[in-house]
Length: 261
Image (cartoon, rainbow, N blue to C red):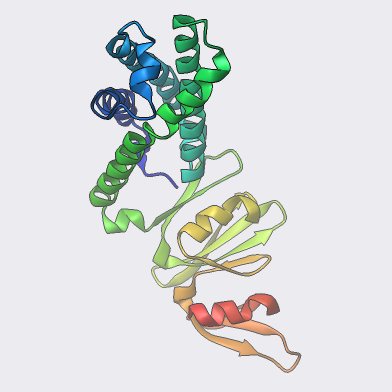
């Protein structure tokens, strides 16, 4: 899941201004991909075109990043969503840059400018994108206390957080049709809490915190497993450090769980 820093508009401002500035400096200093000839257009327009392209990138990012911030509830859930948004953003920038260059020189077809602008966006802007994302991730890792990082937030089908627990106190999670029941320790006693959700919905959360799906209906916290059992009927189970608590283990995952332990 994405750290909270990626839900702040100040974080979006880094993309909005850092990426265009990097583009301008990189293009002026290095003049990559035959840009000196292409953007000059035989009329000494290189600096003018680079400046206008930088402005187009700023305006595009201002719109897309503001939209992303407004849709943060739906678009700030995991790294894949962030990656997909960045790819979409660079694609939009590509089309706008190609359109601008075509309007500046209509004697050259739009299809000529499109691959050029693909190079400018995906091979130049990718560097500031990676830099900003990396710095934000490092800041988030540094600022988040260890205890906070170990908090598991269980949300229901409406994406409302219903239960927050430390990872260490969670024993296992059990599926019950359209509900999941979380079993955890509270002052040494086993308690449970039921939320409306599915195993499929909580799988990314469980895998992120290192829980293991030992059975189609169970996620177990490996830290609480004390022994693996195999009975006379060749059925497998995991014995937990709570007396009388054992979970079934699917045959196909038994070996994998053994290796993890």
